[in-house]
Image (tube, rainbow, N blue to C red; front, side, top):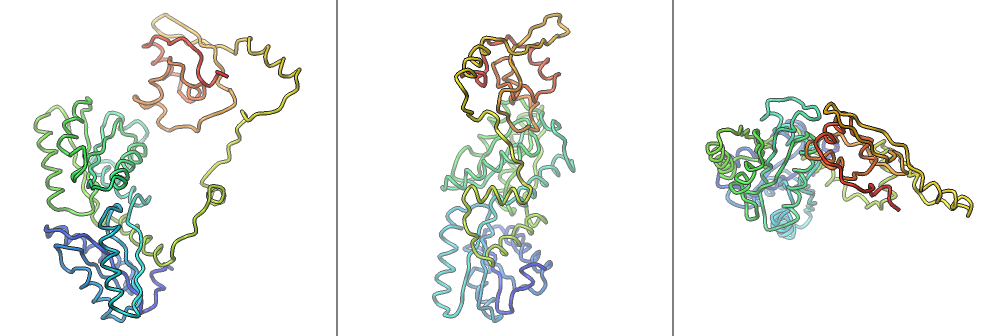
Length: 386
């Protein structure tokens, strides 16, 4: 049973929004509270806004108090922790609590980059592509442009860029960029103008927004303008998040986290052991660790340095052939990377003294393709140097 089902009668939940002059944003925000009520019929849930929209936060708090609520769990209905989530909402909550003795208000975390939010965003992107799922390599010919809100808080802007990277790797886009509709840079218009210069013939524009309104209209208008100016490029506009199921899942978990209180901070060892117990990590032994050796062994190893490692040749249809004499086993390794064959990834370093353990991950056809089209750079891979 969910924690929300076990709340006492004198407890309730408040979802805090910013508010908008656009009525569509107001209506769509209310769907979050409806989604929670539908899942948890006994839960006392209200929503309120900082400005522009009704009900405001004071009105929503009054509604909860009128239902006999003495303990309120408030969560910001915002994607990232910018000024409103960090300062404005807690200021309103603190002032209200001071005026109502006996009332306790706990304030939770923004939606952030919760795994459910990432999944919600990816779902919207796949919908725009007309796909239910993708395989590695399917989208190497497609560019992703993520549109964040944009604020004066650099950390919040960085979270949008981080989201772009996560989604780009999860789905395997050929290239990705982050643009913003707010006060920071690059702007949506300028970002799209730069994006078309990269040569991709398919571009997905995906706004990471909860609700519709003027900003969404403006983002889509910019996309239409650039698309009209570049008829040889196919632009796909992803829908915003709205009350997508994964979004409701995130709200549920954020509320449950607020009820449970802050978890104790774990140091790196404790965190590792927790993830190990959950099966989230594999233990990897590094065989390149320093091992003491006798003088005789040291002399033997010194002699071995002058012996060539095993070599192998790559033959190509063009009639030329060449060998490279480095071993693929040299004491350390890199975890397998699912996009090792990405056209703009590590394969571009083949023939440029790339680390041997990367070479061991490439399918032979990729090695052959790159070596057939490049002149080898002489030298020794860094992983083979002392």
